[in-house]
Length: 232
Image (cartoon, rainbow, N blue to C red; front, side, top):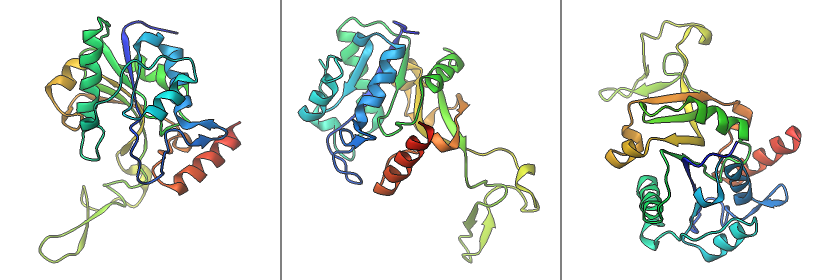
């Protein structure tokens, strides 16, 4: 269902070290960027779907879907040191200048191509204006109460990250979650006040671990394509 109160931000800068040109690299036969755009257009009007890129080639690939790309990210916000928050705030400022109305920001990173519209809809439904963010997660492979360890500063010995180390079954440990990077629904007011990492009111939306692959390396890419072919 399309809504007119969402500002969708799809970050796709040109510089990519782990996988060169990954945002437009074919994934199962289609440019990776197209997957995020397709889902964004299922939940928001085209005018509220903003591809944030500094790269003209990426912008052109985005336009192949029929989506207008009227905004270009400033070069200063496309470096390795630029923060996601600053890039999103710049899109928000541009949207405000265009008179676009929205009460939440939906961040869809292209690097999660196995995310579905259902994942997005569930996260949107979980969000409320009295929290900072609703975000998709997967169960963490390392649980700080069970099998996640730290080294002591004084002697370098391993010790359990949390708890007394007496748990012998993983199922007895509290759940530990890992943000999977697929869907973020962000309170615009909270984002203007603080960094995303400083949010205290974050609500998790569990996603299947098999579809939670975040493309950061060539191996991630091979795994995600294998999963994608299996799911089809």
